[in-house]
Structure formats: structure tokens, C-alpha cells
Image (cartoon, rainbow, N blue to C red; front, side, top):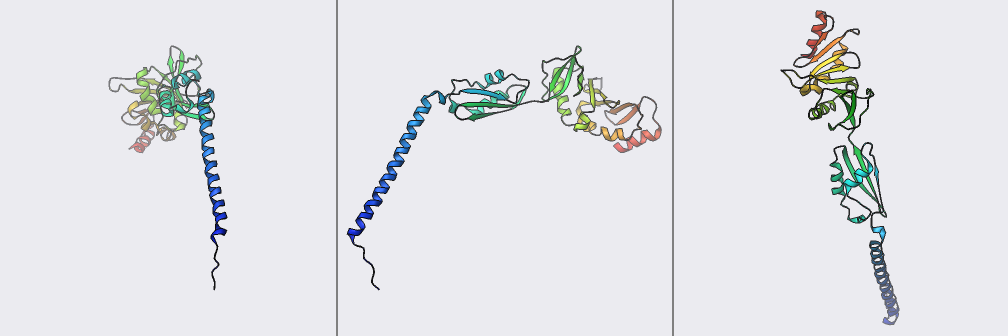
Length: 260
């Protein structure tokens, strides 16, 4: 079988065409890169490369201007030069801010998204009530209306509140919501003794050191008491119920046996 032979004269036009196509592709690539570089130069020289606007989202208690000031971002800042990690750390340095993120939205808009510490309780001070955040920070906001949505701390010093907040965070929601007042009532044997008034009418005496562990058994203890019983549940060293009227022997034994 004879092989078909292609002459050099027939191949030359095809080779020329291929070279031309390859040259055209290179030229298009070079031109594209050239115009892209020109556009980048124009962009970075224009106001669009600077921060055009800044907004804050998620803040309730902390003023937006204060958060923007903490970020150190201004309308003269380079949009692409912003170090988001440094900005986040600076904003999170605020005692009321738990978390911060920085979002860059093209062409030049910055969004600062923050998450504040939640209000968990109130501090009573001369007849007024100030919110206490979950990190123990007491806000300066004051209200004369008795709060009904969270426990009220009475007779507490600012430096002692954080430990109490740490313990409250460990409670189940149902038990946390059943607390009305928490009085700091230290004695000679325990400087961290607290006296609680519950929404269901009972009182509780406990130590902050073992507060969450003991209080999480509160519902179980109450379920063993008679419906019309009234008194104080002690959670200090041991656990027992002190009735305003004397308990029957059977009631006293049933509670203590369960705790052993």
C-alpha cells in the first residue's frame, strides 16, 4: 500500500497559518495584560481605591462611632491596605464587645460586624438597676423599674461580680430563669455565701464556689417537697431543706438520702 506523500509546498501555507494564529493569541494575551495593568493603575490612583463608606452592624449598647474609632479606619484609608486581623483585635478590646469581623464589599465599602456580650443580670445600686454583661462588666445605664427578665444582684462589689456571672452561665435555662434575686451574704466561714430568692417562693443559701453544681439539682430537690411547703434550701456543705414550719422526719430523710 502506497503512503500518501505531502509535498513541502502543500505544508508551507498550513505552517504559516498556524504561526499566524499563535502570534495573534500572544498579541491578544499581551494586550489584555497591558490594559488590565492600565485599569489597575487608574483604579489605585482614583478615589475608588480608598474607603468610601463604613457601616456597623450588630451593635446595641456600643455606639457605632465608637466602634469605627476603635477600628482606626477612615475614608482616607486604602481599601486593600486594611489589616482585618488588627482591626478585629482592636474592636474586641472593648469590654462590651465579644466578637468583631471586617467585611470588604467592592468597590470600597467596609462593614464592621460586632457581637456584644449579652446582658445576664442587673446590679442594684441605691434603688436603681444597671445591666450586667456575661463577662461581668456593669453598664452605666440605669433604670428605676424593677427588672423582671433577669436576676437582680444585691450587695455586690464590682470585682466580685465576674465570678458570679461565670457560675450563672453554667446553669440550665429553666433554673436560671427561676432566680429572682441574688444577695451577697458573706459570713465568717464563707466570704462567698449567697442568699437567693426564687420566683417559685423558695429561698436558697449557697456558696459561689459550688454554685452551679449545686443549683443544677434545684428542680430535683423541689420536686421532692410538698406543694404547699415553704422554706430555705441549703446548698452550702451539705444539702437540706429548712422549712418555715418544721418538716416531718420522713420529708427530711427523703431529701438527704437522695443527695448521698
